[in-house]
Length: 191
Image (cartoon, rainbow, N blue to C red; front, side, top):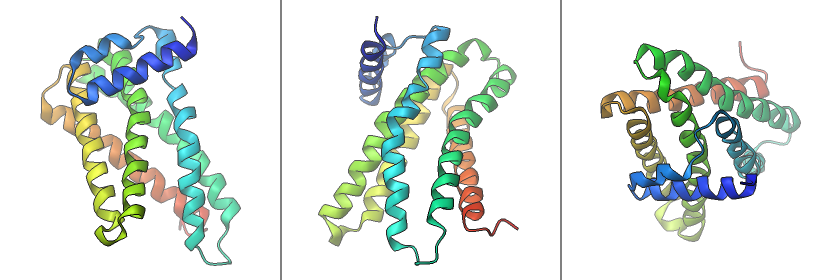
């Protein structure tokens, strides 16, 4: 099966899972090759990420270090994609779920494509309906992606909802910390 076919199957699987259809898991490749291929999701999401970071610069002051900001943001993006799977590689054995690591990471990675799509849609709704405020749409999108992440963790790891929620919140907080450090590095105010 070609990489493009497997990618489309995985994306369809994420859509089925988003509709609470557990049979969406049948569309993922849970082999070691499928594990590494799931990081292709980072490549798919990257243009949207880069656009959003570039868009952030529109409101920046003239003396803002734009190039350094973009470089640091790209490095932070890569770190985010590597850090969480590495942490989970060590956490899941403590939870007695080491054998489910590949399944979880494969689905979690591919789900990020759908999650970015939802986030972009929320931003677009904010532009189309400015009187309602973009913040409300984005807040709803963030809550929806967190709930979706909990569902994926519960389903793929076969853990209780509180455990799945803790895993997803750990990823969210890790992402926030990396983003915060990245922004401080970009503007030269880490210390």
